[in-house]
View 1 (spheres, rainbow, N blue to C red):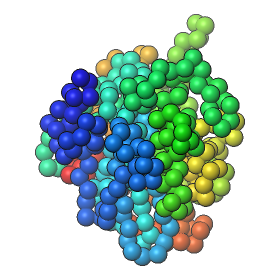
View 2: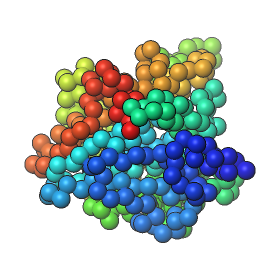
View 3: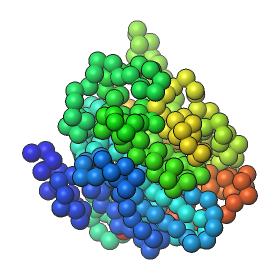
Length: 357
């Protein structure tokens, strides 16, 4: 019944799919040269709620291939909106860009259950063409799609690392995945297969965390949170590019990002495992989502918060794309170029809505 209600809502908000699974409302611009499905790289995903659309922007001019990923955690809405804006506006002039706007469609098919005090599943906004709904999903794969209860302890298959059982449904704890694993492991495996097949040179996984203002009380003491906010995590092969990117973003837009090398002790994460399992250089960026300060914020406004509005967070993600591509070109001597995408300054002036079709 829950999936049927979701499909009804998606028809109302403009989804063109009649399938019994989540399909995002993406309105591709002229720069999209072809579309496909993640199941093109791993057929067992086909016909399931784990399958998700893939958008290709091929200039036809030689250059590197870049993969942009949003929706690994569909409640981290700045990443999905940034990816959507890119698909609907970008024109690639040299090289090729592939966009996966909803990495975990299953998590997007349900409202947030991982954190308390979260917004509604569908958030209405006014785009440049009229009413539109943004999807605010969950952090993890829907347990109905996983098909089995969470274990008491999740054991990362390749490393043996132990984590809480619910992390078995967290895409960003399941890389590099495996073809005969759980649906979430199969999803991670399919993304790795896409990267290998398409010979992706570098990639960015867009995320959100709690804000620097967040805190918790531990043993009567106030402990500051939000360590991940405003952070760019780099596989060790991408540290020089990442360092350049953080300097460019601060110089151009006055926003400071902390640079961190991917820690080899923590397994299953995209910035670690994709970089180890493939030739692709991996990056992950975090923006501050006020909705994640759930322990003390009531009815957080994840769209128009005064300090951390969505336009700021989306702008940060797109500025990171811009800076990483510039850094990659500089260090690798390549030409990957595009136009049409709003800058951080554009978004701060005009709002994210102005760039959604």
